[in-house]
Structures are given as C-alpha cells and as structure tokens.
Image 1 (cartoon, rainbow, N blue to C red):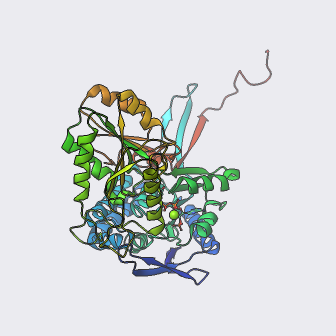
Image 2: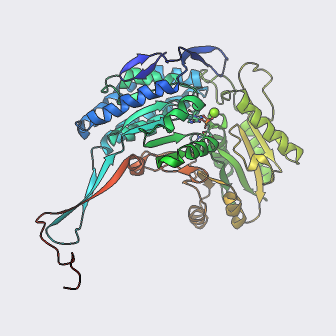
Image 3: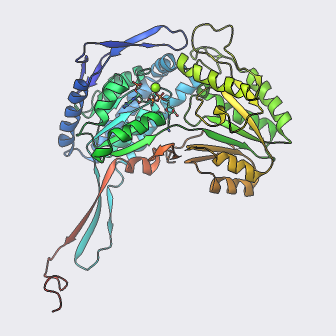
Length: 486
Ligand code: NAP
Ligand code: MG
C-alpha cells in the first residue's frame, strides 16, 4: 500500500518500504512505505494549507463528512474486521468490537462537533458582550499504538476533525494496514490535506512530526517511555500534548464477590487481546480466606481457554504481537518464580503452536510488590494473585503503583464501592463490569499514565483552544482610565 498525503496515494521520498506480518503465521501481509522527515514535511504542509481552506467549512459540513465516513466503514465492516484480525492477531469478536466502536465514535463526534463552539458569559458592565470562543488549533499529529491500532487513532482523528482541525496520522509500524484501508474507504472524499497518513518508524517519522513547528498539538497513545521522549523533545515549543500512556491496572475482589462471576470478569479483564490492553488487569488482590478456592477456580477457568489464530472462530486468546513482547512476559514470570511465586496454570509457550508469539494464559500466586510482575507493565496474558487481609490494605495496594489508568472492583457492598471509587487514583473505575468503555465517558490516566482525556465532551475540548472576547459596544471613556486621583 502507499501513504495518503494531500489527497493522493504516494510512495515515500526514501523509495524504501517495510513489511507488515501476520502475528499468527509470521507471513508477510503487505508492504508499506518507510516514510522520512521529507514525507512529514509534505504532509504537514498539506494539512497546514487545509487549515486555511477549512476556515470556510461549516460544522454541519464537517459532521456530514464524518457521518459519511462512518457509513462507508459500515458497508465494509467484515472486510475491515478481517484485515484488522490478520495484522493485530486478536480474535475476530474483539476486532469486530474495535471496528464497531470506531464507526460509532465517528458518528458521536460528528454530532458533538456541531452542538456548541463556546459560550456567552456575564460581562463586567452593561452594554458589553463577553464571548468564550472555542477554536481549532490547526494541524494535529495523531500517533497510535499497535494494540487497538484503528480505534485509538479514530479517538483522536474524529474529535480533532469535528473541532475543525486537520490531521497527520502516524499508525504503529506493526499495524498500519487497517488505517490505510479505512482512509481509502472512508476519508478519500475529504478535502485534500484534511486527513494525511504517513507510515514509517517512530524514531524517524514520529520525531519529525511531533517536533514540527507547524504542529501545535500532539495526540499520542503508546508507552510511557515514548510519551516522555515526546515531552522532552517538544519542551521548548509549548505544544499541547495529549498523552495516553501505560498502565498497571489493579483488580480488587471484595470478600462479598460471587465466585463464578468474579472469576469470569477477571479472566476477561486480564486476557482480552492476550493481555495487551492499556487497561488490562495486571495485578489482582483477593481476600486471604477466599484465596485457595478463588485461585483454583480461576486456574481451572483459564486453563480451558483455547489458544489459536485470531481468525479462527473457536479462538479465545490469540498470539502476542511479537517475540520481544513475549520475552518481557517470560522475564516477569521467571523473576516472580525465582522470588517465590507459584504458577498454577500456563507459564510457558504452548507446545502445539510453533509459529507466532503465543504464551499460555498464566495464573500465579504467592506474589508481592517486590516483583516486577506487580510493578511494571507486563502487557501479556498473566494474572498474578496477591492475598490481602483488610479492605484498607487492598486500597493501599491498588494505589501502590506509579500508574493510574484504570482500576476494577468486584463487590455489591455499597460502602466498599464508594470507598473504592473515592480513594483509588485512576482515570477510570470499573465496578463489576471491567473494561467497558462509553463514548460519553472520558478515558485517560492519572499519574504516569498520562495527561488529557479521550471520548466524551472532554475528548473534543482537547482539540479546541479557548479565546475570551471582551467587547464594549458603545466604547465610551471609562472613569478608571488616566489620570488617577481626579
Ligand atoms: P510505543 O512503542 O510507545 O509506540 C506507540 C507509537 O509511537 C507507535 O506509532 C510508534 O511508532 C510511535 N513512536 C515510537 N517512537 C516515537 C518517537 N520517537 N516519536 C514519535 N512517535 C514514536 O507503544 P506500543 O508498543 O505501540 O504500544 C503499547 C503501549 O501503548 C503500552 O505501553 C500500552 O499501555 C500503551 N497504550 C496506552 C493506551 C492508553 O489509552 N493509555 C492505549 C493503548 C496502549 P513505531 O510503531 O514505528 O515504533
Ligand atoms: Mg513499540
């Protein structure tokens, strides 16, 4: 495939390309251009020119094009789901959800973007008008990760565009294909330069894009390390940074939790997309008295999940995205075991799947916060269970972490629920229904999990800058001007 710049399919100035592979079979799916800073320059110039032209477009025109993009994607739903499954690896139902979400996000922001563009506030005096105007910034850089490669770009592109900005998108190098196909299907009718996609390595294309002087906003989802790098790189430029970063989400099982439902909820929260979700449950706290029973039931449930290529209808858990990501999981498990943890199920590569970075869903007990598996983002199919004695202790353990993306609780005890959502420092709190997102519900992190929010009204406002207009309509001479003292 080619890149999409200024309303045209183009090759990179480098004439180089890189391969995109299927993580389940390791076969090459396609090649895409290896972009360069020169390509970024072209894309930003096109986006910048479209900003000037865009001053003439109305909110309704923008809304109609976003709705049209959503409709085109609906018409090609199965094709997009299949392509996403092949390049990302997770099972078909999870990709169907990702595409469905993306489509609905376009419709949601199409409507929000034409609803308001500021407010009128009371003026200091009569005969005056005071406006709060919400204005687009201009060119927004949208950079996404490979784990929800499509959705997380749409969470940026849709509100950025609804707010009147133009975008330069850089998809993750492991997963650019669905994004390019979406542009072909759904965005090709947008005015040239409004949506541009540059493929290529983060260190090359990403750096050039985020530090470009004509890019006032960077909307990034990815690792905390790259988020910090972007913040350092752009520190001198006073850009608006919108950073959705890593997580280490806790799941607290309360002592009143029904066993079967809690086991099912936890399995899903920890293992969806093979644990490669920013809000995956990465550490679990279980009442000490409940632990033996709970751990046994969980290990039994998890050991019955079916591993395989995401494209097969019977697959529950697909491959990991690649060997370096699996190696980190193996390191975390090995270090925990060396420090006294016990593996109840999993803890190895499945012997029958020799191609693809598969790892068996793994349940561990006897873990503690000295272990990397309880402190650092593992980003794989592991469920470490730690025992607690009091609910106070469970909350303290949940907060004992540098990240603050999401946090889950299973309980029907209203007092515990209230304490949990008031005291746990995380951007999203899920009670009894982990990892369910809501278009109207702002999503993002506290602490090292980032700054800014996506979705909801907040997710639109991130892409507006605010201007206050003070207008004295008559414009008479004021008694508080010079000279002072009469
Ligand atoms: P990553 O390595 O940080 O990469 C994310 C994106 O940044 C990719 O498109 C990457 O390009 C690009 N990039 C790399 N270096 C760059 C640079 N110097 N300047 C600008 N862009 C650069 O993350 P990942 O491995 O793809 O994704 C997994 C991480 O994302 C996890 O930490 C996960 O928690 C986080 N995540 C967070 C959220 C959230 O909402 N908070 C959601 C999903 C995932 P290349 O692909 O070319 O390297
Ligand atoms: Mg990476």
